[in-house]
Image 1 (cartoon, rainbow, N blue to C red):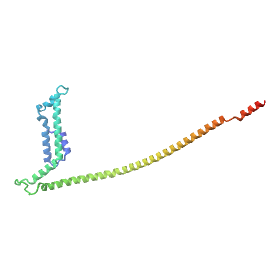
Image 2 (spheres, helix red, strand yellow):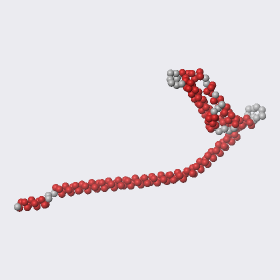
Image 3 (cartoon, rainbow, N blue to C red):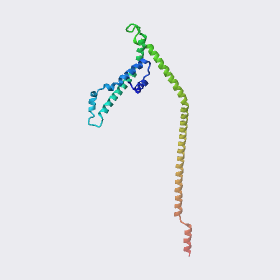
Image 4 (tube, rainbow, N blue to C red):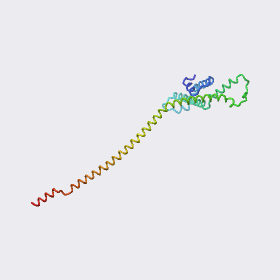
Length: 218
């Protein structure tokens, strides 16, 4: 018997059109869940022999291989079911089977090509898909209309931040240029002060010269 989780996994990946399609899928899953029991230990013996001399438990290794084979086959089945449009094809076949019940066996009793015969069903399916996409588009438009004001507000905020950043950067550059100019002025002033001090220091002192003259007179 198929596990509930396995059934749900397949159901979630493919919409069920009718009970007949669902029955086919469930029958496959029942057979799929029997795979580990159908794989004999002898079939896995070459792989199990490869782990001899290791710490791996052979029984656990064998059971794990069976589960991995089961999982891989289920994934292949789901891919085949999805990519080959199996559900739509089964739905078409079941519809045609019901449509021609009670009629004598014949090859294309309507005289139509297979494409012409299934075109109405394809049209109905495409209409459902289109309606779904239109509904999805409406929901997306509503969601977009809800978030657009916030997006615009964030854009305005970002523009304001960038403008403020540019203004602040310009102010910093101006201040840096001003400080560099002041620094150069201070350096020039220091040089002038130093030169003046040296000039005063090295110049003859009139007072000392006056004292020297008085000593000479005495």
